[in-house]
Image (tube, rainbow over all chains, first blue to last red; front, side, top):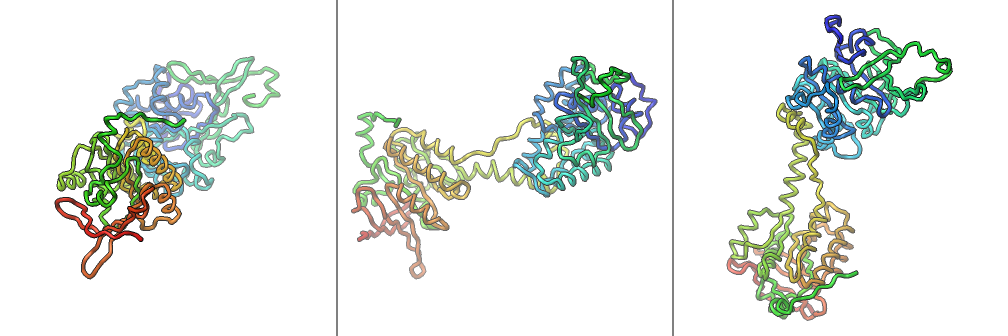
Length: 260
Length: 267
């Protein structure tokens, strides 16, 4: 396990095995990080462990789920030994259903206009501010942004939200669903998320000798030096484990592209 | 395949071929009452007394369990007060759509506006974090009301006061289809159905369609004479009994409610 004493103060120590080493100590506080990945690449598990490690350190955490009902999310995550339902029951990890939030704000409609987007930002910021959230996950920003029709509005939404959360010292992971994690792929569905985010973590699958391996790669992280190497991910009952994918010197690799 | 009903001979004898309007003098003018299976469409003006007539129409309540009063404007308390005042039966089925709508939709909208304007308080956030499912308050009142009336058995008596609520919120063609279904149901099970609709802002083509569906068309009017108001009911359609077409000036008495005073035949 990592020793937290080696990390500098201005970092949000993720507590995820291997990730803090990649980030040279953790995510800079108040950053908005885009965790972009293909389906089944471990985005939700990684994000939930990020919250659990924070909760274990006494931080208030919030998870906004838009892709699946919170009941289902919690049922799925309970299989991991690192997760304890008491954290949710005691309010250390606050799980919010976006559908419920939409309903409460009168946003249960097909698309959002400028007022709606501002109402949504205000409510998320209100929650963060009122309960002192320092770790936030939105799963996924892709699903949320589908309701925002204009690219400009999506840009406004992400920029304003990121800025306000940074002011409050809240480190945020925005999960982005992508269809491909190859080197030519976009790290976001709308093309604007990646430009606005302070950091980008890409997750996908790589085929190696007939096996489909999950990998993670930090593409960008403002405010810190970091490794840009690919790391294999193992989703163990104890949490996410990252192992460097170094010296995979098979000759076929030299000609193949990322993730292919 | 069309449903058929076998009517109990005892019921046939008990209910007869006509039912009362709940206004004895009006029954007399209409040669005994309203034929079983009729759908009455009442076109109304503000202050013309149609709401009182609608309640009075349910007052014969031959079978209280099979008598239904649906209102989109009034509350339960007000209805009870009127029924008590005139000593009409209180054991009929009453549904107050307006109250339900206020509670389910308007209150929610108001709360949403408050959240958007003032933000969340800590208690709101705690409740939000514990709420796992969305309250499905997007009720389809039109379908509900249709099903409720269609669920009434033989010789039912029902009032829908009024249709404006649905015409303002739904596609009018859907509302007309609903009225058609209800008329067919009333005819099939020999029920008595009254539906009121306000003429203020009513599209003439919708009025025409409703008139053609109805077995009986009643218009409630009010006019001023000097310093007084004069209320009248105009029977402008009575299927297969054109002799019943009349203009009835009425007043409201504390004992009998709506009471026709003078009658004029439509030439």
